[in-house]
Image (cartoon, rainbow, N blue to C red; front, side):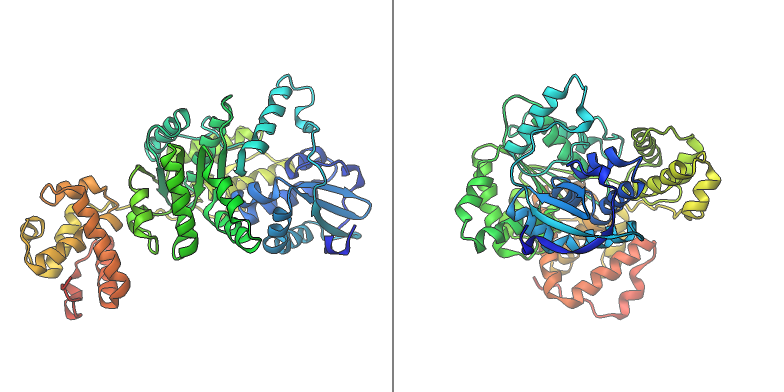
Amino acid sequence: MSSGDILGQIVPRVETRCANRHSPASKAEGCAQMDGEWLAALSQLRETVGERNYATWIEPMQWTCKDGEIRVEAPSAFHRQWVGRHLLKTIEEVLRRSFPQGERMRLVLTIRSQPSTAASPSHVGDPNAATSTRVRGARSALKVGRLVEKYDFASFVVGPANQLAAAAAKTVAETPGRRFNPLFVWGGVGLGKTHLVNAIGNEVLKRPEGKRIGCLSAETFMNMMIHALRTDKMADFRERFRHLDLLLLDDVQFLAGKERTQEEFFHTFQALAEAQHQVVLTSDKPPSLLPGIEARLRSRFEGGLLVEVMPPTQEMRCEILQRKAHNRGHTLPDCVVRAIVQRCGPSVRELEGALNRVLAFVEMMGQKPTVDLVETLLGPEMAAEPVREIGIEEVQSETARYFGITVEQLVAHSRDRVSSFARQVAMYLCRSVASASLARIAAAFGGRDHTSVLYAIRTIEKRRQADADLARTLDCLANSITRGGSPNALKGQAQPSSNP
């Protein structure tokens, strides 16, 4: 063992009975009864680094606990380098917190000498073990990045907030490259976008065609590109990505402002599209509202199908929570499920974190889950904030009032400077504040074509970045509309010039 492999002293001793080599997940399953601390450490590590980072960087590594040493084997030199640079300190901190006493051990991060062919302990005696082995072999041979295996369509709760996105994802999985290319899924944090893209990949991997799949975040794409540039391996990088059958790229908003990465991704996108290979993208905003994204990329994002994932309804959140509890071997009373939901926001990740706290206490202390227990662990019920839907008519009325024109002038086809500028502002606010679709906005503004609406939104967005007065005006108008007030209070402020 070279001294370069030893990356520091880290955690108290873990029982040597856990010395078999496993992935973190199977490791926890094999040692849970003997070493509850180890299970808690892995759970905390997953929560700290996030599901995507855990699945991409932590889960592929093999962990061995033996003779005063935790040995972590990465599947490649790049994998080892990335973990050592970005996640090592986090791993150390989490393990140190989880093992507060006992003999300290060394953490060794090295490269796996050869791929393990042994079946996971969870598959011993499983009649489908041979199939599982073949699937794992296909996964290692056909992917760039890593899929989260538990994210499939069967475990995705469908409701009014996400039914269009779910239907589009299933269509893409059934006929990749033929319809909806690219598929662009956008929505807030923790609403299921990553689940959907992984479900597409997992569904495609079930087929015998042997599709080449890439599933990774935009940040990982950039890091891999930078590594290829530094090691003079851009030809290998391009060969790897431009011959995929399916590319699933998460969080494309991360590309904003990164010109070199955008240029490389543009050519990758073009190569895949020309070959009729499927591209699926996720973002926290629609393409029209992504700042710092080149126009040619934005245009191609909008050339496929755009679907939004909305916050789940309370009924959906209860079903999601009950399903996750069932996967942990628990059936919770409806009153307990509602109590947890009422103490969390719309994010599914937040729901899962709250559920983990409750179930961890139930499992460790042997208590039954009750509403009182939920309140003790999670605190009082969150004050329900009234949700006020903002309509296009309200945006039109407030914008027209601010600019001193009538709504009729705002929606008409007149081309005078004030009305034209106010119309563009109103269209922008309808999209950003009221979250209306391009088609609805176009219909509400005199039956215009949706491309006119898109042009107006991009124009205001571009001017906002260069004009501080306009930016302040848009923010004030948006706040006023959101609060249901009138922007007349803004009349004392200087309005931005309406010159194009």
